[in-house]
Length: 211
Image (cartoon, rainbow, N blue to C red):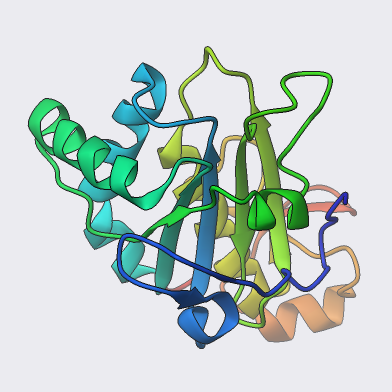
């Protein structure tokens, strides 16, 4: 199954390190990040899980729940959790799905037979508070994920959901944004009385007043 942006994230029920989880119920009205790992006791993924745990205040500030997945069973997750806490100095503070039957992996298209038919790829799904998929990333085994970038994209999505703007290349919160070309000059003046810099009629940069 190939999931696409804008689709509703598939619901599921699966065992986790925090007990059985019914995904949509667990998400509630929060945003979510679902990210998968090929298998337990792998070096790159160990560092990633520690980093996600370290970033808990950042997820909380954005109203985001994070949940990991591996195709190993629950007892292996518990043993791996000990390694993560000891080597990364941050214990797991979010659920890790024990998808040993592959139910969630197959539902989300995490098994790529040409890569390895027995394990999940390292995928990331950002899901909004309406349970719509807003970002899909797939990483190679050798490159650790950049969770600062995932936070940055969530910042952009949450901002642009509420404003008639988009964010330019390498944007970070507080920097100028792009006024939607769909807004006429008159509409833009009403919405952005602080004014803007017009590089082209379709490329208007504005500093948001509350940034």
